[in-house]
Structure formats: structure tokens, C-alpha cells
Image (cartoon, rainbow, N blue to C red; front, top):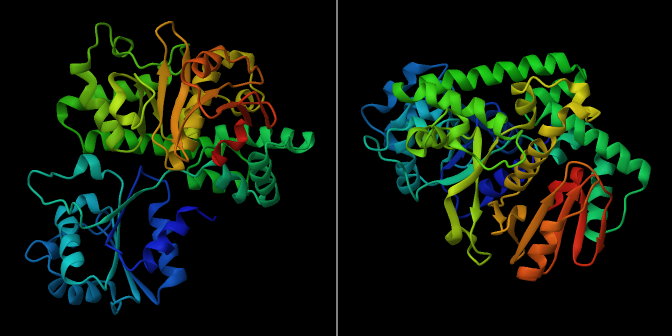
Length: 431
């Protein structure tokens, strides 16, 4: 399956300003596969090292982390001749060996002709920065996410449909109704399957939602294990409680995160470390409210008002134990959850495209689901789970801030009228 990150990786390979690459992201999103694919396609050979499957590797880095010392030893261990610019060196699960992370600084300073990339799932929470030197400024850092809906459609062989969606988005012209209907069905199937590569592959090969759900449950179990393995003993229970509660809060009409819903009388001081762990591990993300619509948006975020979304739609459905058919046919029994699930989906598509997302709320309660900076403009995005596109909040926002245009995401076909760009949910990846 083709991943869009490959274009970034090939640019990194060819860049004259290349630094050692640190590829981070949640477990199972495809980091290792993508790096190995890069090595297979564009290098003469690959020297691969996994600190989880070969824990004794750590001893190699204990005495000396200079490239002159490491290269001969790594060549011997991997049984690969490591050649400048022709060999891709990969350190996997690098969070288990902080000294290997430190070595990247010296590869950058002393041996820049060696191509080295490292992958880690829990770099934000597993690395003891007080004891080990993190190579700040000495590495290129890239975050990888689960497959977005464009990658999902490509994996299904729907290349012509993807190109049609892109064209209709750019020209604001409606899709032929039969194709629009097909794309909406595929969108709902994506909600169930999610973007974890193994799950997408199982969907392409079998279409068996029971098999996919089993894989999703195994991934969720690995997340719970990580919460125990890479966490302060006092924080394990709080982190699990918080993660379990995210899906509960997405079922509420107001999806703003509330500590009291985790536990009666819950406060920020009790759960903020748990939330930080979940966001640093890449399995959840915070979207803050902005108090003013001014650039840069980051300067005007309200640190006490935020929403939390999970990293993958399929895992979200698995955590809620939702039946595939209920999601595909949007059962009325899911009415309380549709809004939060759709917001979560849109956030993932926006974040995958590199946007920093926020939301806005007026003093009288008008709310815009997402605020982004796109092509130099601050753009509001309203999200509806169905084709009901009455958007009073958008009208309030337009009157208050006079944006260049606004985006309405819903089940409706493409269009543009009165400064409102209507985009069907399956085309969120085009934004």
C-alpha cells in the first residue's frame, strides 16, 4: 500500500540539508514499513536494528556513540557493509536506547554523509531527558499518522474516484450522484476500518470486520500495556481512566473535555499528567479553543478549554464496541455519538495534512468545530454528520470576522454559495 509519507522520505533522502531523521508516531501506524520501503527502493542496502527484539544492542552504545566507533560494529552486527550515501541505517524502537538517540547528534556533526533514520512510538514519554541528551536541532523530526481516507481509497484501487474528488473540490462542482453515493459509503466503511495499515490491508483482502475488530482490539491492548510500561506508577490508573473516558465525552452534545466526567470531583491537577502522556504518545490529541481570531492563532488559545480526540477512527469504534453495520448505515441508535465521531474523523484528516487545529465559541454559545490557517487565511470549518447543513454558528462567525470564505463539511455534495464552500465528508483530505 502506498503511503503519502514516501514523498517526504524521498525528499529527505535527496536534500542537501539532510539531518538524521526521527520518525515518530503512535504504535502500528506504519513507521517501520515506510522506512524499510524507502531503503528497498532507493538504497543499495539497509542496515536495520531493532532495540525491542534485540535488547543487547544497547550495550553497543554504552561506551562510545561516535560514528567512527559505531559504524564498524553496526556493520558486523547487521552483516551489511555500511557505505556513505548508499546504505540506509535504521534504528527501530529507539526510545528503548537513549544513547542511540544521543548518537544522532554526532552523526549529524561528524558523519553527515551517512543516511540514518530512527523510528520510535513513545519518544515523548519514554526518553529520560534529564539524564540523556536529546539531539535538539540536530535531527529532522517527522510525525506519522494512520492512513487518511485518501490512502484508504487508494488501497482499495479507487484512484479514479480520488482524482474526481480532488477535481470537484478545486472547482466546487458537484460529483455525479452515483459517485457521490459510492464515496459516502466508502467513507463510512473507513470509519469502521480506520487507518491502521494492518486493518486496511485486512479490509482490502477480506472485508471481514470481525477479523479487523480483533486486530483493533490487539492494538488497543498494546496501548494499555504501554501505559503500564512507560508511565509513572501513580499515573497508570489515571491514564487508563482518561483514555477510556475520551469516547464517553465524544458522545455528548458539548464535546469540550470535562475532568468531572472522568471522576466525580475530578480536577485538572489530578488528570493533566495523564492527558499529557496520551498526547505525547500520539494516541490522542488536544484541540484548544481560541479566544480571538487573530494570527498567530497559537497566541490566543485558552489552555483551560480543549477537546480530546483519539488517533484512529477504527480504534474509536472498537473502544465503543460499535457494530460495523450500525456505522455503515448510520443507525439512529448512534445519534448521540455521530457528531463526536465525525469531528474526530475531520480532525485526523486535518492533522494528517499538517494543520494545527483549534475551535471557537462565542459568548452566546455559537461554536465553530475547527479553525485553521489555510493559504495565509484563517478559515472556519463547520462539521455535520449528515446532510443537515443549517449552520447558525457559521453565520454568526461570518458576521463577526468577515472571513474570505468558510467550509461546511457534511453529507452534501460539493458547492459554493454565499462565501460558503460545501465539501462532502469523504473529501476532508483535500483541505
